[in-house]
Length: 400
Ligand SMILES: NC(=O)c1ccc[n+]([C@@H]2O[C@H](COP(=O)([O-])OP(=O)(O)OC[C@H]3O[C@@H](n4cnc5c(N)ncnc54)[C@H](OP(=O)(O)O)[C@@H]3O)[C@@H](O)[C@H]2O)c1
Image (cartoon, rainbow, N blue to C red; front, side, top):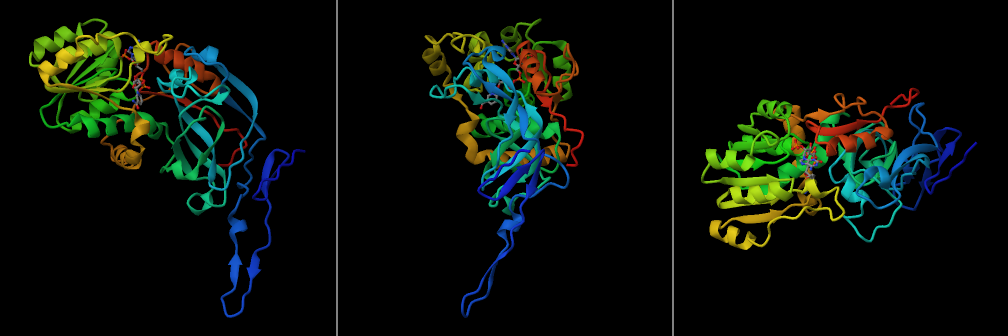
């Protein structure tokens, strides 16, 4: 029998966590109201017959490499983490795969971080245990989503202050956490979108691109979207993208030059390399290019493919054009507002949140942490339509 005592008086017995219910502390002081401290009764709770195992599966970066399979190890029996006072223990039901999972596994985000460290950026699931302070705002069984490291695990501890209460656990909501907010905040901050502006979105049928297309359409812009297949182009049409271009069969630069000799006003650019160079050349007078990413280089050792920089000052000056980078983590002050707005739009049916759960992948749907490796490969083969989501099924005995 395993036994674990936390600061809060919470223990793990056998396969189930149980609540130690201390007596209320009653303090009398002369002339004052008695203070009844019931806080411990709200502290860690059991969860109605459901059980939290003592160990779980998780993905850990054990070696720095942009090759996800080489960098990441599936740990089959990691201890389930214990939430601290302000924390939630979340049982992950769906986790999101991001292009930057391989930037993270190669240590590009923080060169001081040394392996081992946990992988995965975002998840959605239910609260299954929580600390005293966290219990002021959250309850057992509550659906929550989060943007925090370590989501490629069956359970993740997340500070309550960064968790996002959501109405239900659905993969569509997960698409908003990184992808939706990236498109929303970057275009709001830097896009200066208005009716009639021409907006070019690269990787338009992917996780974040799908939202950039829809947000630009909401602003009544003319939207051009690049993608790699006719099926993706069909998906973009369904989002009312005005001009989907399959870059495998058409020359994007030539198509744009022919249709819009004066150029495009805004580029939402995620690919880098030749696509970046082409996008710069397509900019209109006072055009704006937002660098969202440069996925074409992420698998290389440098993480980026070369672009034509020597002519850049002259090209930008001649057009009074500008280029600006965007990284979601620098805009967290706007994150809650973005999530609230996007969630509302999804619930009212104004926003499509396309999920790719791997149904069309060679080995089928992405289920279980083992399939994160396949899901990353699938993205880097350029196959996904919408956001790649991996489902983590519940144990059969769960009542939550
Ligand atoms: N700045 C930020 O804060 C932030 C946040 C989230 C994501 N991002 C960036 O947004 C971009 C998209 O990320 P995501 O996670 O949403 O991925 P995604 O768009 O769902 O999937 C990646 C897509 O990129 C396209 N692609 C083009 N060339 C590629 C290549 N050489 N290798 C692989 N894919 C290629 C593929 O679609 P097609 O070939 O059909 O176009 C592929 O489906 C990435 O650059 C990522 O770094 C940035």
